[in-house]
Length: 412
Ligand SMILES: Cc1cc2nc3c(=O)[nH]c(=O)nc-3n(C[C@H](O)[C@H](O)[C@H](O)COP(=O)(O)OP(=O)(O)OC[C@H]3O[C@@H](n4cnc5c(N)ncnc54)[C@H](O)[C@@H]3O)c2cc1C
Image (cartoon, rainbow, N blue to C red; front, side, top):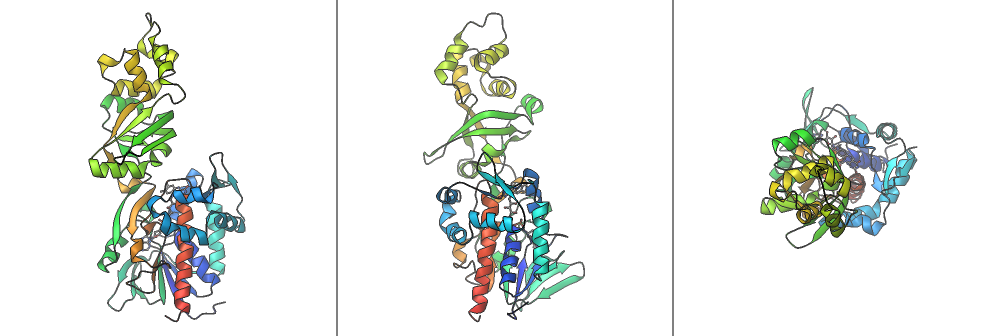
C-alpha cells in the first residue's frame, strides 16, 4: 500500500540500490528501480562464485578500522545498519549463514542466487517497479532523468533520486563508471576511480612466467614499509600470474601498494618464503655439506624450499650469490619483489575513488543537488575483501533511502 504519493527513482540495481528500494517500500513511497543491464545484481551474483563473503564477525571497533581514512564517514552508516543488522536481515530472507575460520561470514550455501531470488521476490511483492535495459544518461535541461532504452530515450520526473551506480571494475557486469562525467558536469566532485583489491605487475623473465604462472605461493609472508615508515606484515598466500601477482594477501595491502606506486613509480615488497623458520636456523641448515646433491635438492631438504619458491629465488637472486648459505638464507627471509603497476581498474575486485563525501550531507544527499542521493561503491571509500565491501554498500543504500525519505517528509 502506497501511503505517500511521492516517487523515488533508484538508478543501479546492485546491493546498494536494492537495499535502498527495500527501505523505501517499507516507508511506502512509489519506487522505480532502473538498471542498464537486462537483470539486476550481476556483480553480487559474481561475488557468489567466491562463496559470497557478506560481512565479518570481528569486533565492531576492529571492523570500522577496515575503512581506513574513510572510517569517520562510514561509521554513521554502519551505526544505523551494521554487520549485525546485515546478518539478521539475511536470516530474515530465509538464508542461513556460517562464520568461517577466518571470521568471515557466508551464506551456508556459499552462493548468491538463493539470497538474490528471495530478495527480488520480496521487492516485487512490495511493489518496486523494475526497469531493465535503462541506461541512465544524466539530466535534461528541465532536470528530468534521461534513460536510453530499447524503446528510445525516455525521461522520468521522480521526487527524489538514489544513485547506486557502482564503481568502475568488471564493466561487463554493469558498473562501468560512465556516471563519473555526468556528475562532474554538474559540478559534483568525484575522485578518480582507481583499482582496489587488485593484482600488480612484475617484470618476470619469460622463463619464470612460462614455468610458474598460475602457481600459488603458500605459506608466505609479505612485508611492506611505506614512505611514511609504517610497516605492514601479513601472512597468507597469493598467486603468480603471467603479468605479476594476485590474490588475497596482495589484495589486503593493495591500497597502500597502489598509492606507493602512484607516488614513487614502484613498490618494493619483501617476501618471507619460510615464515615458520628463523633466519639463523635456515643459514645453519643451508651451511651443512651439500656433497654431490644439486642446490635444488639441498634447498628442498634443508629449507623446505621447492617449486615456485625455489623458482622465485632463481629469478631474483644473482647467480653468483645462489650458493652462499648466508645470502640465500637471507633471501628466503627477505626477498625483495618490485611491483611496477597495479592491474587495470576493470580487473579489480572493487574501486577506490568516487563521489567525495564532502559533496554530500549526513543523509548522503548531494548538497548542490537537493533530492539526489548517492550510495554504494560509487562513493569515495575503499576497504579490503572480507565482507567489508558488501556491508558498506548495503549500509549506505539503507542510509541514502532513509535520507531520501526524511527529505521528502520535510516537505521538499
Ligand atoms: C569477482 C568479485 C567478487 C566479489 N566478492 C565480494 C565478496 O565476497 N564480498 C564483498 O563484500 N564484496 C565482494 N565484491 C565486491 C561487491 O560485489 C561490490 O562492492 C558491490 O557489488 C558494489 O555494490 P553497488 O550496489 O555499489 O554496485 P554494483 O553491484 O556494481 O551495482 C551497480 C549497478 O548499477 C548499474 N549501472 C551502472 N551504471 C548505470 C547506468 N548508467 N544506468 C543504469 N544502471 C547503471 C549496473 O548495471 C549495476 O547493476 C566482489 C566483486 C567482484 C568483482
